[in-house]
Image (cartoon, rainbow, N blue to C red; front, top):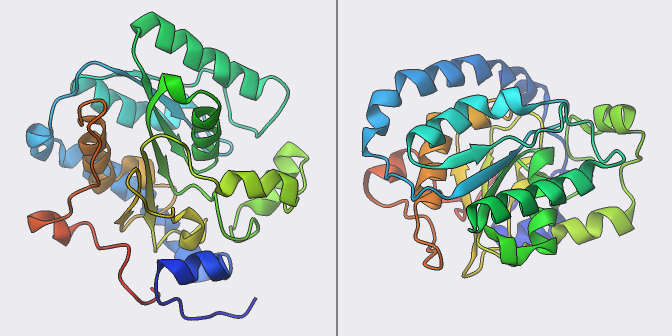
Length: 268
């Protein structure tokens, strides 16, 4: 598909993702280890992050990733007053037999144990699980946060679609599979994305904004989204909102230095 200049959010939805990230952005994925190191170095700065109210948070890892990849962020949230859970299903190899059933069962178990709604956080492919599970059980879900999740645009506008097909045995592109993914969850939802993502075309992670749906843009690699200081800060901000009092992310003041307005015109 030829590259077009995208002027605003409505044009993103009209034209979808243009193409998978190029070789330069893909090469910049080497930043991920540095982003993890930066997160640990920035920990003293997180002292001002609001404390949580003890509610449970369930994490879903990306393709070929496991709970080990979300462990640093889960540890951070535990230190700030939340009860985080990994998905406990080993390496994410796509929608194999029993995976969705296991996710639904885990959500029910956690919600019953805490007698509270659960926040869901998904990284890349894991974000699709978080979104779809929230659609099935909105009464159990407090909010959804995704990181670099390709829920819209063209399903092949990533540099991982061939790997996905090889690992899962599923062919990419079936309309009956991908069209339902575009529908936003019926609960407060935040999509965190980066225009410098080297794996997923960033347009594929842009949600239609509404009173309960928003986008937060950061400057990060795809593989480093779960390790980036700005992402951790944004997630802590979203989770700290009182239940039932969700408001859009405030990028005013000094935050404007780290969070650019995702609605700005132009094309990175």
